[in-house]
Length: 138
Ligand code: GCU
Image (cartoon, rainbow, N blue to C red; front, side, top):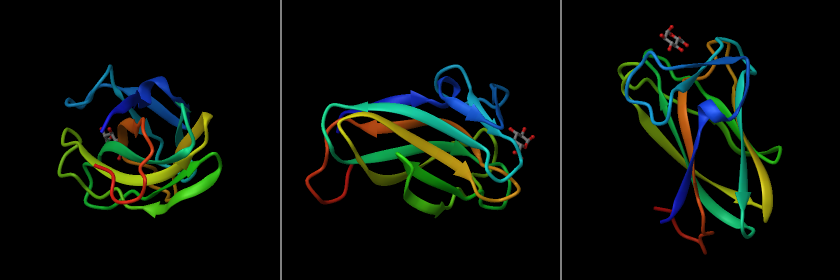
């Protein structure tokens, strides 16, 4: 399935820093969320047509505890307290997949930490370019 990768280091960051000290990221770095609830990364994503698409968030979490985040699309929850579990090391990157409804034109996708530990380190967001007609996105 065709998809576009949107780097976290190119997104809007609230209470986080772009860093590159843990290898394995794509692009030029990743976002290290501040260890606070409410820290977020927000991407602007253009869609040619309205519809449901698959999203993937690539992350690393070198702790043993999940760093859950809310994923919102245009302000509406697409995933509530999505788990971002430990990946074994800050250099071990994983993806988590969800689906969300995009509108035609400009969409805002935000991943917000919901616990005081903040979010995981976030590398990028991948967004499918063609809506699914139901079923599980690849
Ligand atoms: C370490 C690690 C950071 C990470 C941070 C955290 O400092 O080097 O990349 O973001 O832990 O726990 O959030």
